Amino acid sequence: MGSRITQRFLEAGVEVGVYDINEQAMNEMVAAGAVAERTPAQLASNYPYVITLLPNAAIVTETVLGEDGLAEGMSPTSLLIEMSTSEPSSTKELHAILTSKGLRMIDAPVSGGVSKARNGTLTIMVGGEEVDFEEVEPLLRKIGENVMHVGAIGAGHTIKALNNMVSATTLAVTGEAIALGVKLGLDPNKMLSVINTSTGRSASSEVKFPGQILNRKFDSGFSLDLMVKDLTIANQIAESENVSLDIAAANLQVWKQAQKEKFADHTMIVKHIENKVEVEINGVQDTANVISS
Image 1 (cartoon, rainbow, N blue to C red):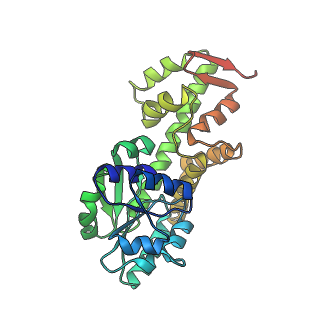
Image 2 (cartoon, rainbow, N blue to C red):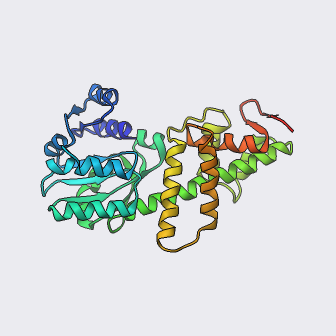
Image 3 (cartoon, rainbow, N blue to C red):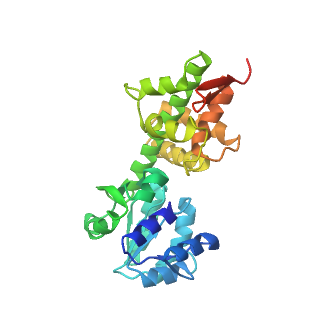
């Protein structure tokens, strides 16, 4: 996601500096026109706005507050835009520390996947001071089509986790429905056509199934491990409020079972379901092969 967003900024004429522990990834961005920085602190000292897009909350905190971290290079006029899918509680803690240092931060996670990052049509949900949102809204609109201020700090990360909870649930249950239909002799393409013109349609049935699953590519660009992380965050939010979310809890267990099978892409949750139902959904050949019975 970070490389695609960087590319969009560059295409829009925005000067971009980059830092990544993955030297190959950084070199690719430099080749596209970005400027390489030696440390996060140097990056923050050279640019007024700093975006973080990292795997988890612990890495975000280390990148911001660690040795040569972003906080060392930020000034009171700087603004940290935290775009990772992170834990709201960690986001609030980090914000409090930065505020005590006279520094600013908003959380602005994105949704839409690699394709929307590539064409600049992401949804961006922003938590933080509204004045900070208004300051960077024009910048965010260079990479996002739907850019919204959704509340106080942490609100963006909260909504992102809950959105992914819905997305993961619809993907899994659509997979179960189509796998069961195939086992009963139904054509997966025809099933999907019915679902997508009926009340069962979703982004999973309209985008992921035709784009990554029926063709057996399983190449959405978002890992199954990251989806498990996001679902865990959503369930932890519920637990912190002493709320029981039965469907979300059961769904998390399904994804954790799939994780044990070492699947890479998150759309491979359907392979896990296929193994349980003992079918293979093959939309390309318009057939389904029974694995065992």
